[in-house]
Length: 136
Image 1 (cartoon, one colour):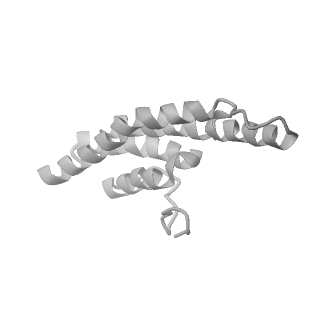
Image 2 (image 1 turned 90 degrees about the vertical axis):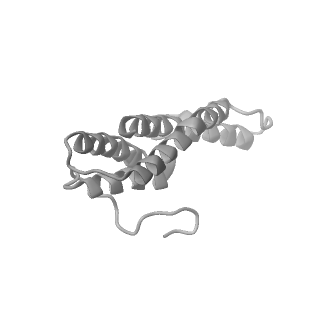
């Protein structure tokens, strides 16, 4: 575990999950990694789809209380998504931080972190949303 965020001790497996528990572990580890880890967001999307397929095929089942808790967690993320997305869209606009070269570099860096490429926060947050919607 790191000082700044929860990171699972064991990295998520790189291949397809062998069991529903593996799929759920990969899915949840993506939530803990958050939108700053593109690989985790993509694994989360894949695992969410695999988890749903396994459930539809009858490979596992959960009780009603577990299902309600799962749905509540998915809905919590989805309801907060619009707010998080809007905040990141605002951060992707270059802030007026002054006229110095350093201020310009900091403003540009901030926009790159928010939405500069496929590794930045906004695209990864969108991947996470797709993963949660798929697994829901």
